Length: 87
Image (tube, rainbow, N blue to C red; front, side):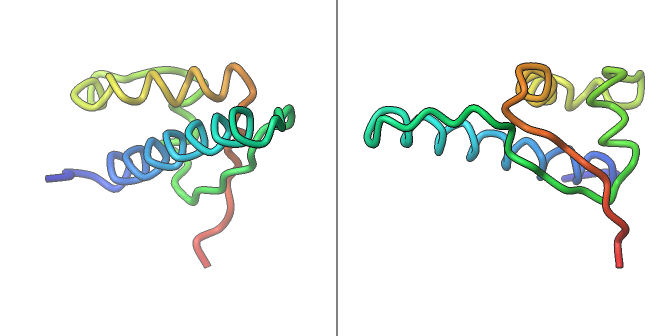
């Protein structure tokens, strides 16, 4: 069970990151297309986006294991996460 909106947003971004990694591999292996530009991803939770740059906090360490993969994808420029307003 998710206990905060930040945790829920992090979980959703992690799913997007995994799906993006899979799609990039499919393009590379089956079609011979290498995607060089980062995939734009948008979120409305500033805490989850900030955590991509600053790292895990004491309150977020219980879901940090998968979050390290997201940080890695952003650092290697496979994803570019940007904030958008909720409405």
